Image (tube, rainbow, N blue to C red):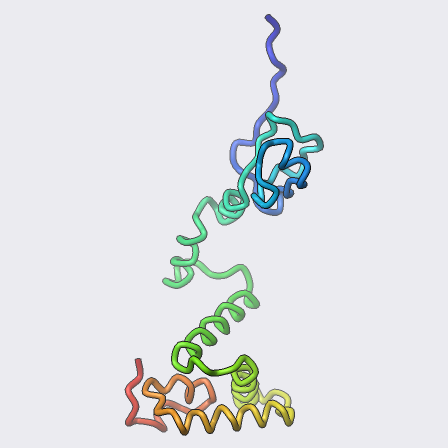
Length: 172
């Protein structure tokens, strides 16, 4: 009986950049769902039943040094790891601020949030002047702050007010 030719296998899942997604016909041929997101090494030309495939999660995990996405997020929150670049860190910070504002003020609109951030950047960075629409939205959000009691002071903080200006508030 002849021995099967030796085919070197990748010892680990390739990173997201080192892999490519399977095409819908390749997924069907292998018996996977068309939306499964299975990936193969970028060097693979012909996909057969014996071709090694990885899930998208496995390739992302390989790119993070073997750590899961959840553990990576916990490490970033605790300060043990950092995001890949400053843009990602800023995007995550803005998403966190938006979630906090939505938690405190469920009715706040996206446009009002953006006007608040634009006004804050204007005060902090000396950025561009506010447009008329941004100014009107900022005024509307200010009226909302005055109507609501804002017990945590988060909306006032987001609008650029120093927390020391409101010593009667409890800050969570």
